[in-house]
Length: 254
Image 1 (tube, rainbow, N blue to C red):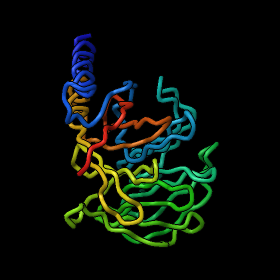
Image 2: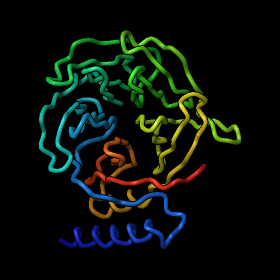
Image 3: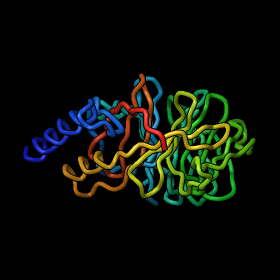
């Protein structure tokens, strides 16, 4: 109960700030939902009202579909102990899931989560999203790859950089929304928006207070990681976080 009271108190304070009393606030909290604190979140994406999440760590990586409002699981599979699961995305009735250092992209039927195929790639796998045509992935560098959904071949790349020309490294979990790529940066509690044509950083949003909320409820909460978009809202979480936060982002520039 003490944790709940503290969480609600901080939530009210952040909401008040983001609604105008603090002009520099980057977001407004709309809702808070439960999140399993055993999930080392790597991939995070909606299809309709169903949330698809991929988790990491050897011998503990999984892929699951569930109701984010009450954590009811619709389907769940465990990856081989040889794989460290990474980013996930859904395109044309398939779920694509990267692995960290194995160079394998796992392909599943969305409805059943039955594995149907694998693709090979060079380098590490980190974040994954899609623009409705191409798969888009990160590898922990400043490079973002646009790949064919048919065979995972590279069609083009962009380099993520600021307006002053500084490359942004360690691009991690990805989401595609409103014509932009949205990305976590490994180890930071912020997200950036990226022009998919140029790689230019269009905005940066500080979500550090959300991690503080998560830590206040569960001390094992790790870094921010996980961006999903639905019904004009972003849904964000982190590794081992007890919460999923539905937020509205304000117009912040880098």
